[in-house]
Image (cartoon, rainbow, N blue to C red; front, side):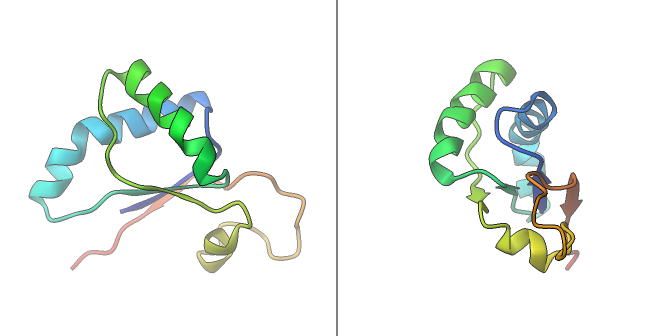
Length: 98
């Protein structure tokens, strides 16, 4: 399951990823993998993951992709190709059912 996150260190995204981390075993039981994607850099994610774990009392282990250039966001039509001023993604989650 791929979840697009508005930005690192935002309150809703932080608590949302904490909830996903707590529920990760349930996703694994269903043979589902969690992946986050943020418009920030991978370097930014390190500190953010520490915050997520501290705030949510969890241990986030799934990857968060850094999409600073918005390449993945454009592939999923999460951003308007004509508007390059947008700093954040719209919030959405995608999954592929097998």
